[in-house]
Length: 316
Image 1 (cartoon, one colour):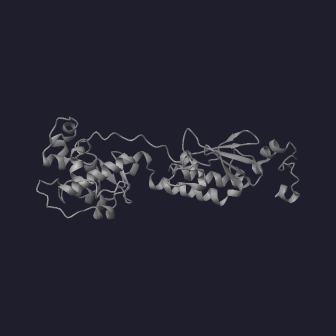
Image 2 (cartoon, one colour; image 1 turned 180 degrees about the vertical axis):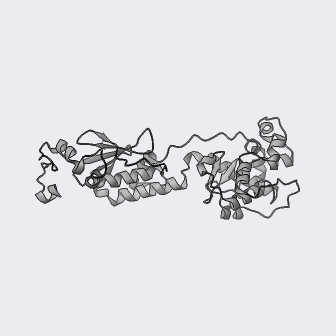
Image 3 (cartoon, helix red, strand yellow; image 1 turned 90 degrees about the vertical axis):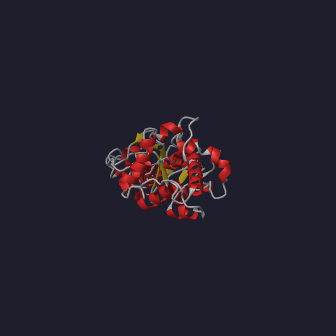
């Protein structure tokens, strides 16, 4: 049961559930390092694995290293440049291509040598904040962190011993199994901005049970900011006119986190009179919308409403 946005913990409130990006279906990692990891699970234990961590930044990797024996197997040669590391992480490396480990590991009866086991590609990339992407470089937009990724691969391929390599695999698998509840860092930041915006204007905002944001603009009109099934940009609906409005000035080529759009739309419609002077889908000063609300109007001027507001307020 979602909680009110004022009681949000770990993005479990009605606002986060409504405005966070859709959780992508977790990929099934039918890879050698996943399929062959379970038998070793009981042997290595889980003492050094933090199941609650989502990131593998440099600090976390260093802290996860235990004193171990030196690697006694043939080590995988790692590229020195970012592009090469990215291709390596995607499986395009000599060890994988020569041994066809991916295909071999998909067969339950296959037995891998220690060299083959350590040569298996992680199919993971790491960004500057330690966030991981599984076989989806678009999530990181190619911005992997070279030093952290290389250190991660060194541990993975046994440069610091077999036990450390197994522990890292265990940790990676736990991160993967938690991906369905994971929200990327930029989306978490955007949701925080949205929460702050709602709380700062709580006297004019009400969040409905389904996460729709109802607010009262400077004009006195009431607006609903609703999730849009066709994209990240919200829908704006006026309670008085029953109409739905597009208030986006120019479609940007750069996509913002979903909750950023929501917060900006909330701010725009709180200041709806000013917004109407810049957005052609709204009449200047909301003359048409005010007329629909009150039924009393003067041509060319904002409508009087029937709440007895002062002339100064009406004509400002």
